[in-house]
Image (cartoon, rainbow, N blue to C red):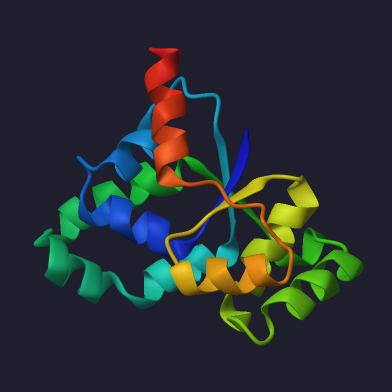
Length: 147
């Protein structure tokens, strides 16, 4: 299964490496392929202080956790997504949360599912008929059933 991960999912996983979210991303044999855009990397690079403050990580611990999670995600340059796909995503997100346009466009492009903890975003997109979300509970149950 192809899964586009939103920044909030990766932040949560990095803050608690023992969480279900982290275990799903780090589990080696789930059959899940995680994707995101380079926007996720830039958002992580914008907030290392915040992540270290909340988690209590030292600089070296933070770098290890950062590398651990970013190695599990395939980052796609937004310029590789066809313009018409991006325009469709923009029409969906422009009055909901334009900051998530890249993630929605990537989900459309790879014909995947979108994993986000942003309830307002989900509500807004579902109201527009876009329901390509995958939820933590579903992913966790899939992982458990494979054991």
